[in-house]
Length: 285
Image 1: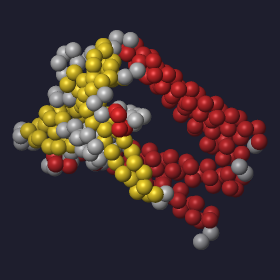
Image 2 (image 1 turned 180 degrees about the horizontal axis):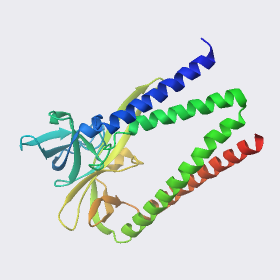
Image 3 (image 1 turned 90 degrees about the vertical axis):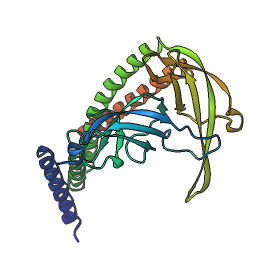
Image 4 (image 1 turned 180 degrees about the vertical axis):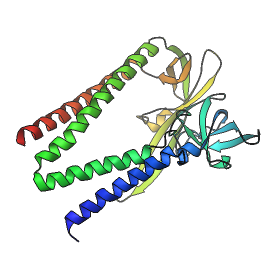
């Protein structure tokens, strides 16, 4: 089959997919729009044992009401669907979504508004359509169109990402300035063995626990693996947490600030790359 025909078919499929998706969204019939959305709470934390295989997040038991019957469901959650919970405590509220009439298939999301518009997949289809059109134009009229078509949207996207990251960095810096320091302890180091085409490798994760001054016991997975897994278990650490939101914590305030700066520098570099690519494409046309 001719490549031109294949490209046209790909564009047609993406276009139809997008139109059907937006129509489905306008009709309020997408999976996200039909989902039941309720606020649940963590009623039990089941921290991994030391040396046990790692899991996606920390397993918890979540209780949430059934809007149809008024019954309360209490179910275990291990992030097989939805986001993984890396910082948990009994009483923490979470956003719960589940298909109508099937609470056993629930998942946890960041907020009750996540996926409410139902336009995620149609937007992705539009992205694929745009990529196909840019590719087709570049093949027929030369690579400068690929530079222009890729660099322009990347630059615009990175401008918004930079604004978002700068705002988050300022907010996090302000909140960490009010952080309270309490003692914590490494209660477990999980060990997972992975097999892939390159062989077998092992990953480790540190689980810590600390009690806030308000009396809440928080269990959390550290974002980075331990430097010495054999010596990490039982280690005492100083934890800096935000009083009104223990999910925001760090073992090193200065390192957290450097990490935020590093993220912003990376976004700026990508922004400059996008701008340079756009300029190069415009000059070479």
